[in-house]
View (cartoon, helix red, strand yellow):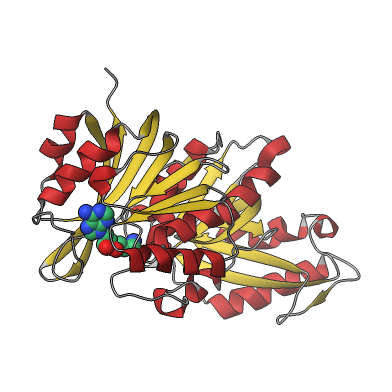
Length: 345
Ligand SMILES: C[S@@+](CC[C@H](N)C(=O)[O-])C[C@H]1O[C@@H](n2cnc3c(N)ncnc32)[C@H](O)[C@@H]1O
């Protein structure tokens, strides 16, 4: 079976990296075909587990907008015979809508929606079009001359990332990253449900919130007690109960159990305080402090500014850089997202 994903194009590589990481940690064994930026097909999914995989991806992914199950693939020129040959009673429950999405194609989307809709009607009985509130939603995706005909079974919660924006949470302080990036970093850390996720620079709790929504147990600490308490306010607001928070300097970190993943955005620049640690030295101190608090197979996903060279610092401690992504913030700042693991000795 195949799933079709429509992804955000706000970054050229992170959406796909997030998908690959989520599939890896959830043991989803499909083959990923990145057709073009924004369109991904996952092939060779075993039919037995496809529905479970579908639900997991819908629950986890931040930079993916839609997930659908592929019904058929064909050439655009064969549209008529292909559509009428499908047994639509298997897919449509009384009412339906067809929506077209095109990639590298100039087809007229509205005309195609009408055409596909009437072809489906002509091939079926007892169904009606309902554009506003259909029971069944058909996605007709065209890439160049190839058509992917797909059906939506589960929907991503589109409102989540809007509602979780930092200024909409009860405790706000400037400098919290976007919830989508936080979710993506949680996925890059490969943390699974019920595993322990730590953010030792938790600030307002933005990263922990997204960790909570993928089902992780949470631990957060911050040198500033107002931030630590703010994280508690925000985690309570989200309804999480499976968390612990600490008021401490990262250099004093000594966790009650080894953690499965660390996701964090250490302080840099003028907007955040680093306790009494000088500038970039905070990164060095962080690597030293965190290493012994992590399980041997734990991942660390962190943000840093482009001008800090993390590699010598992490290697000196025994970490290994696996993946690196750059996000241009403005003319003089690029944020780097690194995925790091303990090196095998
Ligand atoms: C960039 S903010 C983290 C933002 C966070 N991701 C959020 O969603 O709000 C960095 C945080 O590190 C904390 N911090 C600075 N120096 C620290 C240290 N030495 N140990 C622990 N926390 C520290 C600051 O108080 C600040 O809350």
